[in-house]
Structures are given as C-alpha cells and as structure tokens.
Length: 143
Image (tube, rainbow, N blue to C red):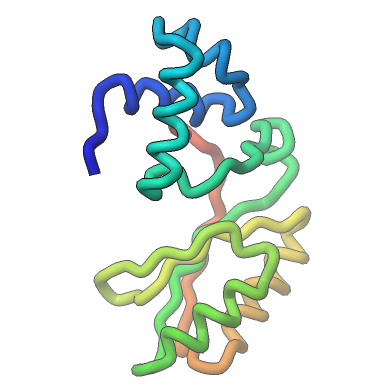
C-alpha cells in the first residue's frame, strides 16, 4: 500500500468533511479533478478508505453522556461478547487492549440514568466478568 503526501492531504480534507465535492478537493490540493477522482478510487480499492460517515457536531455530543467502559471477559468469550456489544446501538466504539481489562467500549446515552442502565446491561452480558466505567467530562482534542 503506497500512500503519498498528497494522499495524506486528501485524507485529511475528507476527515474534515467527507462530503466535500471532488472539484473542491482538487482546488485545495492543487490537482485536477480527474487526478483526485483517480486517487479516491485507488484509496477505496486499496481499502485505505473503508467508507464515509457522519461526523456529529460538538453541540450534539454535548447533549449526550459518554463514558469509557473497561471490560474484563471470561477466557474464550471474546467472540460472543463482541457480537453482543455490536448489537447494542449505544456502543460507539470497541477496542481490544492490554492490561487488566480486555476491552474498552465507548458508549453514549442521553441521560445519567440511561447510561447507568446501559453499563448494567453490559455487565450482565454472558462472558463479561467485570466492568469499570469513567464518564467523559470534556473532549480536549478530537481529530
């Protein structure tokens, strides 16, 4: 997989606004529209660009109560726990980590009481041995 500096600039622009028109991307990169379209197609074909998604505003995020939920799972329960967590809409991201916990889930709920119910739900999943939660107070850097 060969990624050039221009590819990185293109990816950076797309991370700011995935709906930016190709003509605007070309103007900002000082490349032709055809060249930018070809780069996009190549990056998609190589799997560098896996998809495009909605990036929610800070105002929307500020209305949600978000938390990191560290999860310890039983031996050989990773597949089952991951499948069950994937089915929970409020789980925004799930990471495998090293250390005393096996997974970290990033979760969001509209209220503390709903967050509490969500964390209880995660703790009750078959294969989950223990959880530890930390509520996110503010975001200092988001890229």
